[in-house]
Amino acid sequence: MSAADDIQEYVAQNGDMLSRILACGNDEARAYALALLANAEDTQGLEDVQGELDRLKLKVR
Image 1 (cartoon, rainbow, N blue to C red):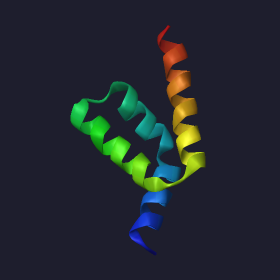
Image 2: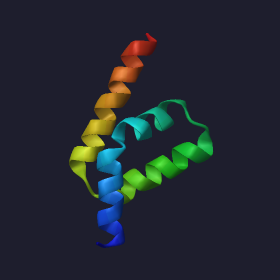
Image 3: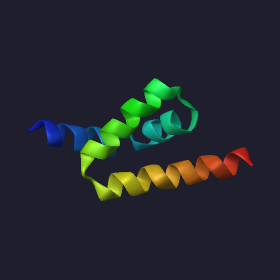
Image 4: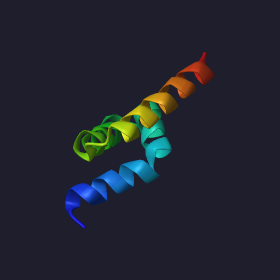
């Protein structure tokens, strides 16, 4: 398994956590989460994270 495959698998399995990090984490944690998402090359994973961010945004309102 290549590093890219490992990143894609991690993002697929941890989309909810990455969404929460992006929504509530500090700058460094957000940077790491964004780096993982940018290197995942997985559009479904990105859509899942976006959906979770939208859900969290509605919860805050």
